[in-house]
Image (tube, rainbow, N blue to C red; front, side, top):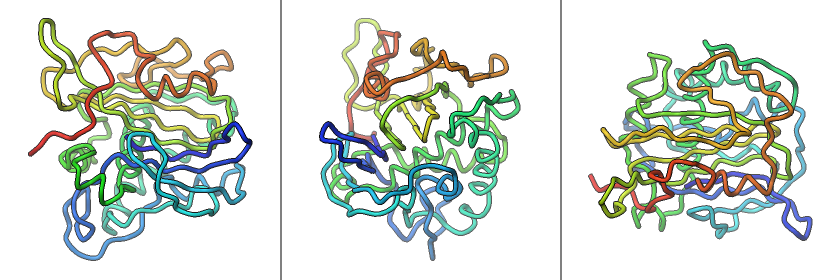
Length: 286
């Protein structure tokens, strides 16, 4: 899982965390398209978010794995974390186009303003959640990558190959809610496993639960990566489904996730399908 957040702990100290879960490929190769050469700096949270009217005070940054803080990354303004794993063509091409749509659609929601997400924008929003989570996971320690934590590199390659169709990858479900709490931003990825009747829980993930929080906007998606093991996941009542598309999405003040609910939600314990569990933390071996 990966986590980038601005938290306030019980002592009142604010944190901007990056808790990486994994990283795909060597640093000379674009994680998405496989280009081998000079790479560019890609923001974990796009730089348009830094230009919104959000707190900009310097905050401590840290990094760990599986939602555990560890390595101290220093103190700096929020939304400045970058990774050096994306080529210029991806950064200024399909990823830039995705961010342009996200900026138009999500900016009001991040600031807590009423807004409607049209059906035409719901698919791109779900893709943005997936892309943001994958980029955030590139902030991994060498130790975590060496131990095999993370999603398979094929996840990066698959979202790249699907960049032109405008839809999330197969096996994806996505929801939205309003967030009211102390965190400024968070990107968390948790491995999940689908347990079949009369079978033991697998020792490798069969999917990933991704939670993206920015300002007052909370988005969550699940992506089942194993063919034939995608199931319908029932989310908490506070969240509206945006993918697969059901209808217009108008976020209301009644759909709220609080700090107390956030960690359970991001950890997967709020999902009602007993066959889908927070699962093992190592990626499948290729």
